[in-house]
Image (tube, rainbow, N blue to C red; front, side, top):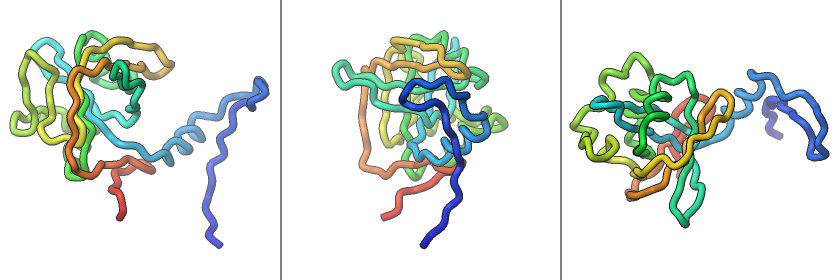
Length: 178
């Protein structure tokens, strides 16, 4: 028998009770156990490319094609995304872990948009050259959600490679096992 430790995180029952929400630490610990893909959200702020790593991206609809992603309001690129009309999303492949680390660490911001890795055409959002999935489109909605803003992206361009995804799980980057 295998024993595992568990984080208890309870908030209200389906009967509509008014129980207190879980404490922040318990909730963060529980959510760290949710495996997800990682993507770089990118936009222009004037003539400067801006971007950050997001792990909260999901398909919202296929007709019309839309995705949503969430950005912490305290992040350095949040306000640039609020003002942007278009945005790019690069879902990262296994070989992109260094790029993921570059976009997740504030002290590495200066080296983020190297033109060898990024197409920087002012007529389109900054585009990562080798993503697992590349998307871009118009930001259709911005929804206030507490500490985060939910962005709804109306997709204008989408392409995918045959690579394997880079995952984020338990506060670290992971790869799929065969």
